[in-house]
Amino acid sequence: MFVGHYGISFSAKRVEPSIPLWVLFLAVQLLDVLWAPLILLGIEKVRIVPGFTASNPLDLYYMPYTHSLVAAILWSCAGGLAYRFLARPSRSRASFVIGLAVFSCSGYRPTSSSDLPPHPIERRRPRRSSLTPCLRS
Image (cartoon, rainbow, N blue to C red; front, top):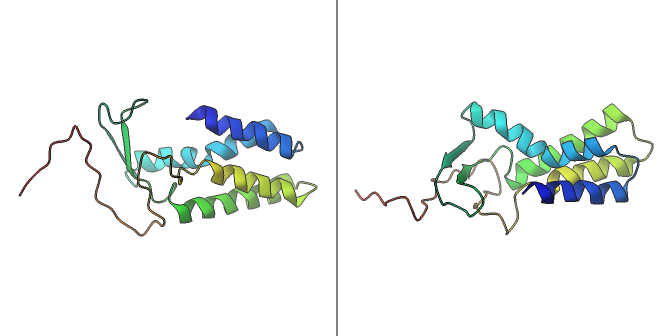
């Protein structure tokens, strides 16, 4: 998971060498950095399901404010604009690269283990894992 994040940072550094590497590391992790407090506040949802995936037991079933398509696009724009106004890069391409770095690790991709909604308004019922018994009414 993290290798992919940081690999994109190194690639972006090659495309735009003027951006400090620590800024690129923060950009590719921005959605996850925002996700953590939202989980702690109960706004986004996660549950532990042993055996859910081979790498970790987290079922990330409700993340509409950080990892949905619309939210990822908005956070990417916010990241690019924040870099543009705070760092004042000499070229606007640097801000664009930051925005792409934020979006690149949004989780909205076919390889994701979760069915991420395209926009935050779409509410879904939590998925059932194969280890969770079905409740019949």
